[in-house]
Length: 126
Image (cartoon, rainbow, N blue to C red):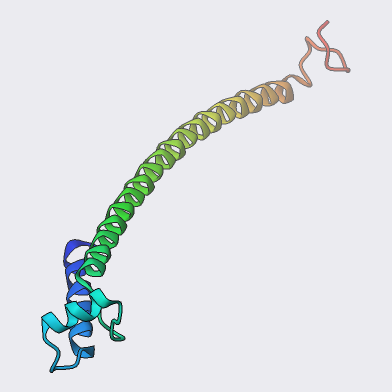
């Protein structure tokens, strides 16, 4: 994300680049006259172009902050979903453990009753 300081630094770098490409003997009036006549020298950036760059940088900053907010919102939704799924899984595992305990208890009772005099050889009630 491009914050204000980075945007200002980029703008300053652009200005320095523009100033380094300008011939030193050009006056601001001469540059304005060349720009108005449509005979711009290569490397000259006008004030309107700088303003456009500023606007684009601001728009990019806004866009990036919106994207960051949307990503954070999505992460929060995803985390809530994960938490819900973990609770469901925990409840399911508790139910499975309970069912297994009941099954083991019944199996032990069955094993103990196999030879019981109250049951016949087939394991059924008499």
